[in-house]
Image (cartoon, rainbow, N blue to C red; front, side, top):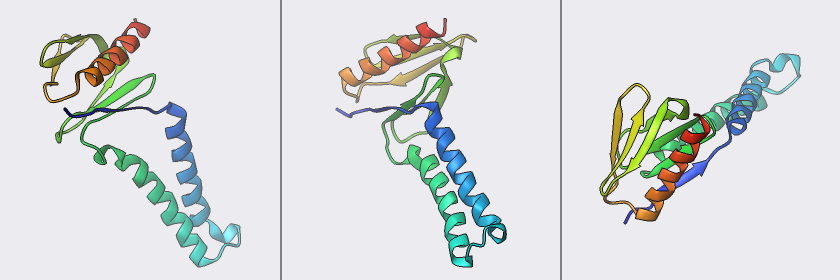
Length: 137
């Protein structure tokens, strides 16, 4: 059985990474005003972009990956493309034998095959959905 990695990433972490990346690039770009050498300028600019690239590339590191914060959830189960859903748009989540059905408020239903995943991990995922759906009602 495959394991699902579930990560809770608070929204302020993303904001901090973006601000630090922006500051590194800005300081490196306007180094004449700070008296920074050309080598350090290049290191700061590249460091800012690499930090942002590493943070944004985290979704390709794992196959069975779930990341969530209080507003949204990102699901990447299997080798396919991921799904980003806002909790405010969700209506319900139903766990069946081999499917996890996510019903949206606009009437659309998203079905995710769960037959190859550990049942306890899928139940944790459903509980996560239900807790956040109830909070947004």
